[in-house]
Every structure is written in C-alpha cells, then in structure tokens.
Length: 253
Length: 238
Image (cartoon, rainbow over all chains, first blue to last red; front, side, top):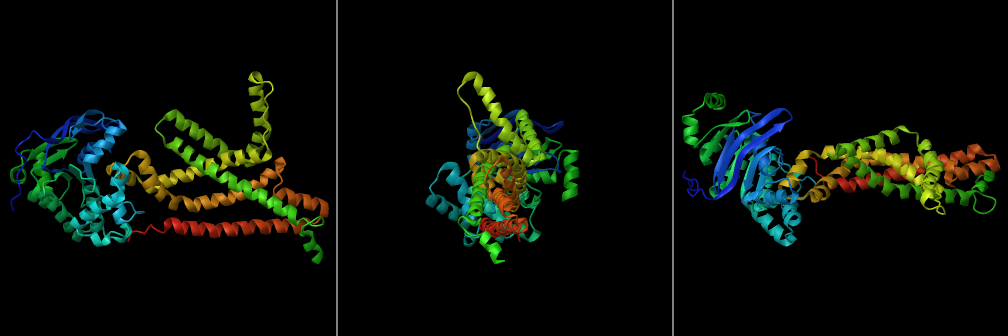
C-alpha cells in the first residue's frame, strides 16, 4: 500500500529539537539529541528499554524537564514558563502506555475536559467534536460509560480520541500497545494507521515493527540516550548500518 | 429507675437540658473545627510536597510537633500561654490592646492544629494514590496546574481520603471532650457537674457513653452515604 511520502518541502517543521541533553541525577539519559520533524511526517522511535526514547518524546510536551537544548513546537520555543508550556501542550497530543483516562469522568467527559477547561470551548461544541472523534475511533456508543467499563483496547482508542479533540498538530505515542492484550493490539494500530493516512504528524515509541514498516517515513533507533541510526524503514530493516542496530533487530524480529 | 430518669428531665430538677446544651457545644465545636482542619490538611500537605526545601522543612516540623504532643498539652499551651504571649508582644506597640482567647476559640485552634497534622498525611497518601499518570494526562490535554488539580486529581482523591477522614472525625468528636478542661461547657463538663450534684456517676457516665456511641453510629451511616456518593462514578477496573 502506498502512502503519501514525506513532505518534500522541509520548510515547515512541526517539531525541532537541537542539542537536547537531560540528566536524571548523575545518569545522562539524553545525549545531544537533534531531531527535526516535518509536517505530516511519521516517525517510529525504537530501541532497547532505558534507551531514552520515552523520555525524548515526553520532553516535547514538557512532561520531562531537560537541562540543555532547545525544543521548538510549531514555532513556539519551549521554556519553563507555564503559559508557554500550556500553549505547546495544545499543539501536542499524547497517548500513554497505561491509557491514563480519567476514571471519574465518562468517556465523553474525558474527551471534552481539555477543550472546555484548557481552551474555553463551550460544552456543546466540545461534545460535538468529541462525538466526531469517538466515531472515528469506532466507539461512539460508549460515550456515556466510564473508563472502567471498557476493555484496554477501547480505552486506548478513547485516549487517542481525547488527544485528537484538542486538534493537535503532532501526536506523540508512548508505547501505546505495550499494555494491551495481544488481540487488542490490532484495533489500536488500525486507528493509528488511519491517522497516519490522513497526514497526522506522528512520533511513535513502539515495538510494533509491522507498524513501522507499514506507515513510518523514518525509523529512529536509540541506545543509551543517543540517536544511533535513522533511516527509511526499508533501509532500516534490510540494511542496518550500526552493529548495535543489527543486534537489536536480530533480537526482536 | 423512675428516680433516675427524672434526673434527665428538663427544667430545674433534671439535667436533661444542660446535657443537651453541652451536646450542642460539643457538636458545634467539632463541626466548626472540620472546615479549618480540612483546609489546613491540604495546605500542610501541599507545603510538604512543594519543591521549596525550607518550606518542606517547616511543614515537617509542624506535623512532627503536633502529632507528637498530647492533645491536652497543645490545648493548654494555646489557652494559657498563647494569650499572654500575644499580649506581651503587642503591649510594646499598643499598651492598651489585649487579647483574650475564649475557651471555644482555643479549643478550635488546638484541635485544628492537631487534626490537620494528622489529616495532611491522609491528603498526601491520597494524592499519591491517584498517581502521576493522571497529572500527566491532565497536562497533556493542556489543563493548567490548578485545573488539573480541581477537575482531575481532587475528585479522585476523595475515595482514598474518605475512609481515613471518617476515622479522624470520630477522633475529633472524642477529642472535643478535652476542651472541658479549660472551662468550656461541653457535654463532658455538664456530665461532671451533674455527677457532683447528684452523686450518680454510673448513671451519668453511662448516658455520656451512650451519647458518644450514638454519635459514632450516626457518623458511620453518614460516612457510608458520602462514600457511596463519591464512589458512585468510579467503576472499578475490570
């Protein structure tokens, strides 16, 4: 299947990261990360656990603080000022490994809380938008249930809809299928593939190499806090350049 | 037996009206303390969790001191010492100004100090029980810090806090009895007066015990109802 290729006009960067360094105490978890993400680009970040891939994407919406470097999201330079952080978070959707739905709110309220409180959308409009995205992830009939009543796959699809309700310019996925039962992985991946087809800019930390082969424009391999290698998926999987990448691929494929 | 029940009658011969008045004072004191103790519990919990180290140390000293002191000592210090301390401070600036702390106010302050030191640990535990993932999810949908707290974190904290707060409420109800020592006419003090006059300690202490058991029973019922309401929306994970 053919998807539109990477935006050939690299002028429009949704995320640009330069010289990013982060330490947890003495542990140097991100080392001189430079990364440019063009509009519409789909990036899969792979690597062993502890390689800093989750930490990297969590820096983009400032869930993690970092000590050095610059992150620019849609022209907004991230600082530690709360206003700026909230502004950046409006541009960035995030899907977590553990879903993190709000258990005390209905599915619909989960989707409308951000738009209503975050950018003061009126309730009716927010509900309309929410229903639109719940239809998109194929669970409009669950709108009035609570997260605890849904299966893991359904919850993760709600989490995707919740992020989409903010109309983000880039979506971050932090191992979205790792906490799911095997038979529920596909229903979540299908939604992600649909999103990719529609041209959503995506950064996915995932071990789903099938997904990477199918939709990614670029696969980034990280180890020990560094970007070791990045390439188009075909080259990445068939012709890895670094020993570390080869070892990793041998172990997971 | 008939003789004993007349002791509880209202009017000049019986102690019924006095005891009821005392019960009123006990309940008003307990209810008046609750909002302050609750607010202070949250404030102290917040201070103990904040990134500012000196502030955290202040919070830790506060809880260590007021959890370790016997309540009666806190009460006596507030009632007898605080008054003269404030007056000695203000006398230098305003010689004609003097504060006098009423037993009721002293009781409220002392109980607030003690029960907020205990309550703040309940608040902290509940905050942690809700989990970091919820804060992060709230931030990720661009909620501000205060919106994240009031719309996402706090509603989920209640289910963790209510059982422990119910416990604390019973302790507080009982704790009010200490205030009789500083001449506040609560139900315990009236009971003692009745005993001094009638020489019927067994009867009056039994009545007092029954009243406290009854209060605990009603509190338990109320707590169940409140918990049910708070947890109504929370459907357990499958």
